[in-house]
Length: 409
Ligand code: NIG
Ligand code: FE
Image (cartoon, rainbow, N blue to C red; front, side, top):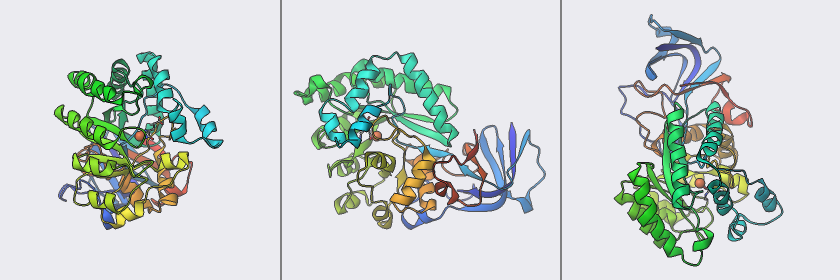
């Protein structure tokens, strides 16, 4: 099956087969998104075959031809941090927060993640799957072409396995890559609040072996945060994950300078995510490491807390990745175009930086950089064909609206 897209007004994030493969973009390089004007692109059997400018378009056969006059084509978004599998919304807590009760206080009172766990543990796997599939289709229509999804609302063996099995079923049901992270260390269940070590033991000795035996997870996640999992617990959990081949990909420094960034880097995390609290020590730890800083400004927006210092991180020469954090508590939206707007208006990222952060860097943050994240021959033809628009900046500018005309997969 060959699809030919012609007369594309702007083809973004191009990379030629002869170029050294781009694996991630950092620092000042984030300001540029390589592009071609007035271009064509040919896909073959689900892969990008070739592209070029209309002036030099060779004669070719295609099964389908799409006229993209006035439209742009980009690689689909790579959303590397989500909790898209959950049982129920938490709009009651949203109202509580408006009235002044903090996210942490809600958690201390047994709400928040524990509220989600109670609901998830009484829901059937089939119902959880159906709900989650609907959410996944919604974000795919907004241009998400690869996604990572976490467990972490089970907080017991059966609940965590149920979530991870749902993620596996989702992977089998949609044509986009879906990665799974094991996040039993998301919160302490009520019955372990007085004996936290026993819950960490349960994760390490019972849950991890079961998850690994079924091959259900790609990554090991921990909510490393004051009031949740401290540095010593996080270290034990990450070491245990590595024994089963699960690379760390952790929640760090959302609410406090928790030491999570340094701990993630020390344990060779693929990414450290959230990063509202980042200072010189965190930046120094990230410099020279291969750990990707992943910013989740949608959660900071929705919780009304401080934003991540994206400029400081980029200006230090580091890469920045953006992800949605789609979850029922701190960010009920998995809408990447909206995320781009927040990154531009609140984090002062340029549209080019934001697009790099959620394409090639998003792919890198889930080890998909060889198949996703740029327009390169041989990569997946997983593409966004936009509505009629004339610049990359128009996507975050046109906030609240979906730029996607068609998601070509
Ligand atoms: O990434 N910070 C921890 N976990 C999620 C939120 C989970 C929830 O509130 O349900 C996050 O923001
Ligand atoms: Fe999260």
